[in-house]
Length: 221
Ligand code: DX5
Ligand code: ZN
Image (tube, rainbow, N blue to C red; front, top):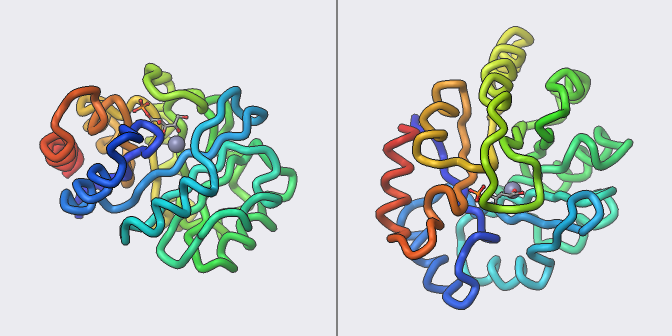
């Protein structure tokens, strides 16, 4: 089975969002990546609960929440999380990671831990029983349009090996940040399963969303 695509809605054209959502649905994307930022954990603000509720009503595509917020456990209730969704919280954002992962699972969603480029894969060794996916940040979180942190390519391969050696090969790996067509191929070879597609691929300004989605699918087949 090929890699899965999660277009990053913070990169979408908000003035034509309904058309974008139906095009993405037609293109057969696997998730819609929703970046939530609090201006504290990362120095930026993006999408909020009202935006997410509107998107939820406009599409049947599952949501892939990326909570770049301090203490995500305090804010989870604001979002329409449901079965089939993924919720990623940052390892660096709460002292109660295991409990927060349990909270996500209690909502019927897949639980995921996101790791900043500087955070070691070893830091999540004790929650492998609680996660369905691990999100490797291939840029520093907070902004679209950044360049890949080169060391993160090796980190993907190391994580893949780390999981396999411990019989956790079923845990999926998602990558987020500067997922260009060229980087996507390298990330796929390194072991990535789900690809957050932003301005580096499907939302390239002024380009054909459907054609780029198809091109990215081929790159990660
Ligand atoms: C950055 C976000 C990413 C970003 C990806 O913090 O998590 O989802 O939107 O966009 P590009 O492809 O521009 O890096
Ligand atoms: Zn993201």
